[in-house]
Image 1: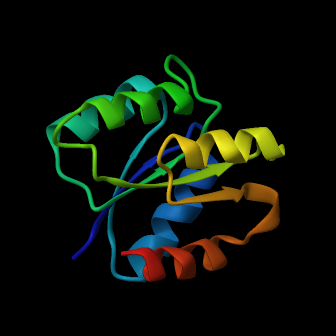
Image 2 (image 1 turned 180 degrees about the horizontal axis):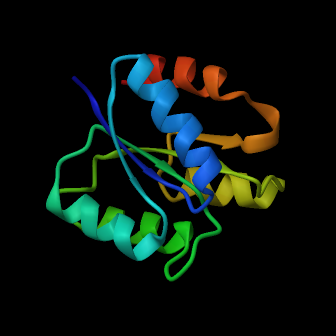
Length: 120
């Protein structure tokens, strides 16, 4: 079973995505701020990280930079799921190593889960 970490500060979205992912056969864990998310990434092995950018304590940009420095996390697949949708932000996310960048308003949770299945 593939293990996914969702770092998202909106409890409603956390609930929707963890439910959808579990229904699709994934094991999921969630963190509601960047600090907790980084801690979980260092404690447990994940196959994929779904990352919001605007987060309390440590933002998604910093998490991406930190992941790419850590030996055990360098190769972790990261999908950004954010409301930030300007071209520069998308390019920055992909430039920092995200495999996909999804703008929340443009995709349903079911569409995101289908994309995840293609990635892992």
